[in-house]
Amino acid sequence: MQRHALLALLLVFQVLAAPQSDLITSLPGAPSGGYSFKQYSGYLDVGDSSHYHYWFVEAKTNPTAAPLILWLNGGPGCSSMDGLLEENGPFSVAENGTLLTNPFSWNTLANIIYLESPAGVGYSYNDDDQGYDDRLTASENYQALVAWFKKFPEYAKNPFYIMGESYGGHYVPMLSQLIVKATASNPNDAPQSNFKGFAAGNPLTDADYDQGDYWINQYLKYHGMIQLDDDDSTSAQGPYDPYDILVDVCPDGSSLSLSDRIRFPHRLNGYKGIDRKGFNPLKQLRVNNKRYVANPPACADDWTTTWANQDGVKSALHVNSDINWQICGGPSYTFGDESMLPIYKNILSTNKYKVLVYSGDEDTVLNFLATERWVLDLKYPIKTQWKPWYYDQGYGSQVGGYNIAFNAGAAFNFTTIKGSGHMVPWFQPALALQLLNNFLFH
Image (cartoon, rainbow, N blue to C red; front, side, top):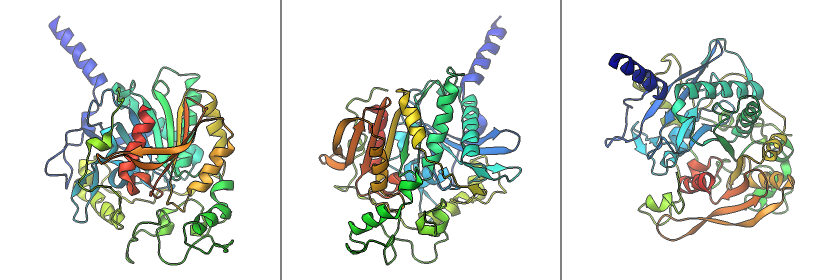
């Protein structure tokens, strides 16, 4: 009798426990003080030929109840490990290959899945080297997500959100749409059962807005980058980072060029046409300087790439050792030209899901003027008029940007982030953490 009870207990443990074979037990260059949270890395098999690499970072506190986020970088073809190691993950890579602790890591608030998508990006691979488009990517992302929940069934009750940026403006709503559609026939299984909404940062959404010359011309004019009477220019003279006009640029010799990073058709590469009421993560993470204004290292992409291709790193992450990891690369991709606006309207019409669109206001690639325009053109009734939102690192409230809320869905907001470029967690990590807190818990 006792033996049967023990076997039953072991079976329950196997069902509820995360896969120990994917547990990260060491990381080359890890902080000397270690870290308190668990991490997992491995593959999710989709169909007969696609193998998606994920890296899962548990929340620092109460991971069994904390929200769960799937993070997707864009490109298309840019790795979500870029998000983990340069934006909102617990570590960043220093020039000497050591890992630095990120005090503004999003796993302060949530569990995060970083998925390298589509297959062929980063450590993900496809046996047939097939090409991708938006629909196939969304389908395989969904299948990978289902496979992830089979590996981690204990997270099927955590509130689940999808977030991403840039070309993720296609990935995120299209995957969300598949989950919403699947809810009709299979509402009780994750991700349908625990899906709560999505957020898209500086998102590629609709070509009529995103690719029009008018909005970039207006942006450059009123940022002092071209003359006020210049109605034609869509770029400025001199070296500047189009992702954030405030930051330094990497000197000649960087292995990652602009055309590598802006992979979707764009004028710049030649194309035209938990009860946490009162919780303040930034105040609890008080930093030494009075106001945290990020100026991220301009050559961090090179340092991350060197670190990720170490044999010891590949072994620690349980990935295919034959793969040469790249921040941006991947399979051939047919760029999607369909508007995402009908998907927004469809998901918001259910009145079940929270939707956030946010824009760093120093980005020229997908500038906030065009994004704000398409948000307003959806014509939803305004719930809360345009007003500032605040963050506080322990030295008094400061304006973090501006927000407008609409009567649509469970919640629908457009938010700007002051002084941030295209990748908000990279360019303004402190404000990004507050933004996440506002989205998840308010």
